[in-house]
Image (cartoon, rainbow, N blue to C red; front, side, top):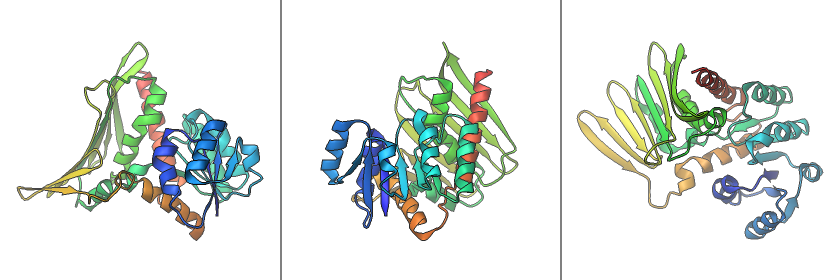
Length: 301
């Protein structure tokens, strides 16, 4: 199978190429306008097939593509790939707007192609284990950064989207309504808190980009058990007045802990097996719809 990797920035180099390079029976095609980076990565991984633009790639007969270019380029690039009947894995978000994301989802569905969004946290083993909790009634995820206020739309779609998607993934009932609060200063968003509410449970997504520490913490609570995960790597289980700490094995990689190995392999398997991945295009679109609603409410605060 021929696979393209489009855009060779930090996320591609740190999270995806190390995984893709270990997969058997695929031919990797690298795509970027940066000639020096193309030469360096081609040499490092011994991938001889290189392209400076999409027009060159389209003649290579690739079946699938990983899109790691800037979010601004996603719409045109993903559309072009889908129109050439190429399955697509795209870094979140699909685009910066719900309507353009919806258009691409509908195009993929019409052409019976996979359009998978890179919500890697759904594949993190400790985050997946949260689904083992019986009758959960509250989910809280906070993902904080230091000295990084930003434009509302890019803040929400580029970063906070992980919080919204993870809380929605762990939410076991239909969302009845949503509450949004945040702090804005000089047109920049400093923090946001979103509550997803149903009769059965509450989900809270928090991001403070004016925090004294860079951190991520997930808590899921049920009547018999509570689990907490810190930075996707350490888990504490509290039940029957006992506390148990759970750690990964020493040989487990960071990419495994964060779900990148698993999500890449699922995308490849879905193509070879002709099956739908667990993150369908329509499922991912629901998270983008939440993002759009959050942006609209924050802009009107």
